Image (cartoon, rainbow, N blue to C red; front, side):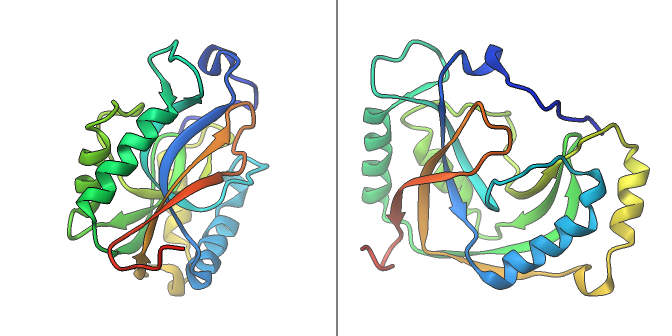
Length: 208
């Protein structure tokens, strides 16, 4: 497993601050408690501090700018408005996801997300009509539990997963999604909190 260094990353942010994305909030307390229990089980391997809320990344937009875009990973407010308009016209209904098992990327521990209706891909396709996503080529919906703080063997992590208490193995929670969230985090703060900026309510969900 690949550790994350605790440092500023000026070669990435180039002095810019707000890194924007569309994401799905996790507000169901039962699910939050479950994720907290998982995080505690693996805490010896995970980088701290971590103040970022549990969430499912939907589409990574880039660095939010109020001015002319200078870099390929800048994202303007006009592009945001175009994305919102496309989503409004599409009028996606509210939907459900399933939260599944613990798994691992090379740099992070995560919980799998099952999207049986493939609706996340449909929403992402619409968002991608406006701007190219700033991300890896293959999208894998998940909830990050934490980044690794040191180099660990995959066998060690798999063994720790196998030691999960029985009540946390093969658990599936249904997560109802009634709105999408556009927000950002501050690029200079590693694992800093997410700041929700706008909500886009789905279908016949409440639209306050």
